[in-house]
Length: 188
Image 1 (tube, rainbow, N blue to C red):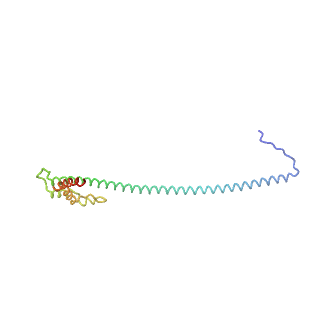
Image 2 (cartoon, rainbow, N blue to C red; image 1 turned 60 degrees about the horizontal axis):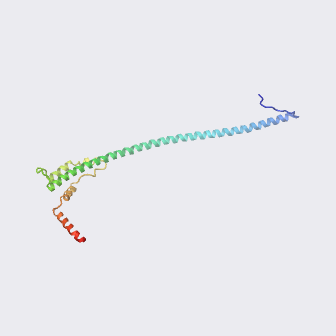
Image 3 (cartoon, rainbow, N blue to C red; image 1 turned 45 degrees about the horizontal axis):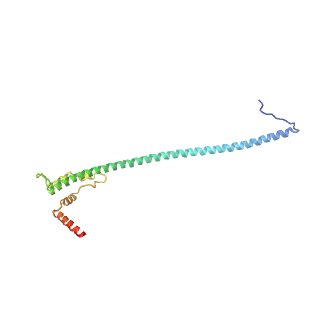
């Protein structure tokens, strides 16, 4: 293998040439050492920056995990509160449906009694029916058991008003018929 070739010439002062070669090599060595030191400092700076960034990243990851855990705990609390609220509202809705059904049954019975359409002469009077419906209503402790309190508690006064409205006086139809006969004459 031939790696290269040189042509050497005879020099009159070999000491001076050797001196120049040594000074050139020393200059190159000095420049290379300075560059090496600069690169080592840069490498150390980058390594310290990398370790700082790694530490900050670990802190951020820990903070993120703590925040996630906190948010999950809060979410679980809110979710459980919402579930409890939904259960209480469903309970109130069921109670309202039951009380509405009871009120409808009692108002139908009261309407039948007021109009005289009931064929059972051994049936109870209005006062007895009211006493029975009051006994079937939930007690005050049961109504206050729920979170919001039951706004659907049945009052006896509205039932009496309904009875009065459903039992129309006999003269109402005659007035309506008289009004309807007068109305076409006025319109013409």
